[in-house]
Image (tube, rainbow, N blue to C red; front, side, top):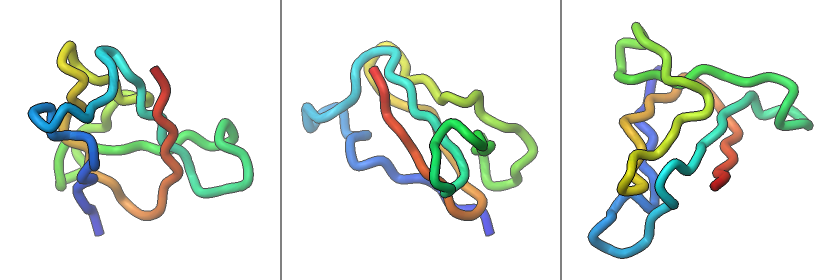
Length: 77
């Protein structure tokens, strides 16, 4: 089942957001992060993968991210 990722810092108006160009990396939930990058998707159909990492725009806002299964995510500036 595909589920949309709702980020706790997506409300730019609330003043809590990542920096311009922040990167959100996704991988399998194994012991080491770098071992197995895992695809996320642009919509619920899973027809198009996002880049990995997913990069925030100039306002620090990420595009829609849809997940399929379990993930580990790391946010870097």
